[in-house]
Image (tube, rainbow, N blue to C red):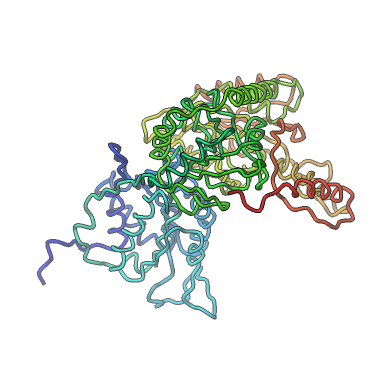
Length: 640
């Protein structure tokens, strides 16, 4: 039989690997690999499919699709997300897992990627499409629908989902997946389920499918009518404020934003994802906004008559559960590339467009607009007051167990402007949001859309990979509490195996500091939030016996360099010395320090809606409900 010169005989896995190796994202003059590598943990579901294809590529074309190990499937996706953020969504990794539990382990990562609007390509293996060996090891069986597999759980978590049931389906599925990965308005987790038998089946692959393909990033311009409505609202404002979200970073709009606010005097509050939109000491940067915000941003937000959201998804933390904006008749102008986010909270002025293009257009249209002198003075005064509050919070107390604010201050003073701070869950995100002084557009990486415990080390590893791929030697500093560390710390082994340098500051407070504090405010008295031995009589974990867990020894056992800061009056100075040692090293270093979780950072006058029982026999809950009901009364049903 004659061969077709326009096709190549390959397995589905071989074709997918080669296809992915030829995809490129283009943003203006910048061009980079969309999928620069693949993480993989192999099992019977993918060792003969993707495993063989990656081995073959490694033998014949090592640069086509580099393979990287991981120790946990969830962590593979976290690394991909960390990388994607550092590359402003232009590139991400693929993650391959085996059937059943391997695939299910990636579900949390999929939800995290989609919630954060960050691209990640997931390749979970699936059970036999032919069902010839039905049921196979690790197959989920549901009597009412035999066709459902574990991978169907990815459907509600993914921005794109499909299953390659026949080899010929690969071509359309792969192209559709790439479209979503590279679409700023649609991106998130992209899942291609790969039955283990189909992975190894052969197909005649069109050579066009394997050629270099460029995906040009869309930057939609603002429509003239929508822009005109936004400009009119801003020109009529007396107390406007900008909320800068992650879209500012992803669209590379920091410089455009700086020029806009310098020309108009409009202050800027930042969401967690928007950290880095302006350097901390810029006169118009009033800091974090919302539930974990600063007094400066929140006081200005409370009186604002026009709120200009740029690239923000308006989470409940950003809006302080719809209590942050209290002015009568406040108007919202929402700029977002995704209409879903642009129309949040009932706004009537939505600009569905790229953040940078819109900010540049606003700059031109608002050439003669400037906030009044009295408002400018209010901005200056509030910013100065909060900066002084942070200065005081950073001062060492001399206590044997320092508070978290002091620890953050020591890390801040020991890092360079281009270094990246990484965090995700617990009390650290809130404290970092209002205290950390961001000095670089990519220097603040707090995953707070999903706020996933265990993200920190894996995400930090992805951030470091992203920095190195861009030719940067900036240090990546992961700050993590003991609760989040215990959730997922095994990617320290990955860092050691590949010689990738991280600096990990592990804060030991023997429990869940954030939820412990929250538990107090809602009247639950820190129940279940301490790491203590079980009291068999009280049948709880509220006793005084601290668990004899040595997390420093755990990290040391992985081959990580460990520095232990002993409790004492000099602990903050010792922490600074440890950080200097870690920065001078080329190896991953974990610094272990004990803290007092009851020493809180300064309050920024934000609120978060966590319902409190209206009926309780606990006096602490009764008191908490009274306060909750009072604040709840200020909550708005809509913002726009």
